[in-house]
Image 1: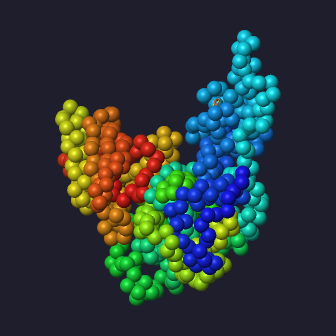
Image 2: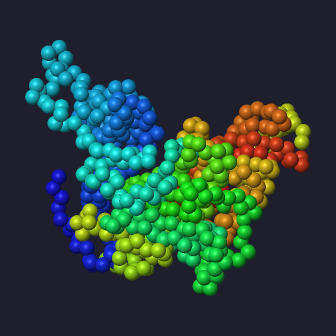
Length: 412
Length: 161
Ligand code: FES
Ligand SMILES: [Fe+2]
């Protein structure tokens, strides 16, 4: 498909400024769907455990592109566009399920095999010698577009483009951070979908924004789950695209008064929990990293907040709406104590999460705040102008990394 | 703690409890909300999808009254969200049965969320799946599992359902 050059030029060279029209421009949004989500990126589509057996499938979207992800008879995972070759209906309108051999479109009963090939057309030869498809019609030519798939630690990613293998896509360091958490078979504990009133990028930035965490979220600051005075930092992949931020728990950081000294709202004297079991975390990954938030460009998040583990998928839904699809997980071999601990700590995250509730509304505040300021530039200057790994979270390095990758994909 | 006598107007008492519960939340008397529960208790908010699949994790999970009180304190002191209120419309409770001195009941609800700028949205519909006990002569929730009909939550869920 020919892609026209961007109509709006990117206004500045530095990564430390971003124009607000990027959250508002309808043509830019369409270009994102093509160039980013349908481009050379890996997009999370499901868990391997969602489709264990041949014929098991899930539907999802890659950006706005509806896709079917299905386990083939040889064990491989296929993905193809969920759009019937005939008149464009969804081939499957279910969230998932099992098909024995084939998918059949309900509209006029055209059928597809587990690889997404159009294999049969109802009444292809017509009825009683009349009607039917022209003999020259070639099924292969109109088969749904196929996506390549890859798996990583039980996660399934798909791409309509031609990205490097997932290991190279992520780079060694980010890959190590994924493997650190997803190091054994997982099980799903629950799911929820949070509808956010903002452009998808405002959440993609928010989750990479290590600067806001202990300032917006009073819970993180007050209970010293993650504060700038604690060790850790932010790892940014060399291309800027992916990140992993970490907070390390060390006893000597527990008495700092830096927040109180600056009069920051998120440190509150005398605020205690009656039942602190929600913080009853144990080190389960063989290190002292208490919190790790990791993103895989463009739309995947892996969360470890103490023992609360979740994967999140960012699904754009137009210019000023998106869905955040949460899957909370534990491990298959969790003890009853660990299981209960994860259930309790889940109070920290999600749409009602003590430390993440604000992320549900803050993107909308930006969307509304910038409504008539398309050409104004936001200031993304904490920690300089670069997008390199830094040993502090008082930086916006990983947000700049997002824009570095975004601009490369978009041709800005 | 004695058994609950099903013939003893319990249907009306449960309807009254539900009405008081809803009023406490909608009138922003959240500090009173934990007292509708027995100790120990279980309060979770989940979706029908999770519930049907037997997935235990909801968006809120509290297994003590202290955890319920911590929810309220967090809303008052820590969490940031736009000023909003709910209007609960609670349907008639269906008594499902009684065993070991506890009553099982299910009650449908509908919650409209009213934002500070006047915007009103249907925020949640679902059912309360309850286990109730007598505590000091009053009905209290041993368990209240809030099963929302939709898996979607708009923006955030601050005030309890
Ligand atoms: S649209 Fe699918 S068979 Fe006609
Ligand atoms: Fe946040």
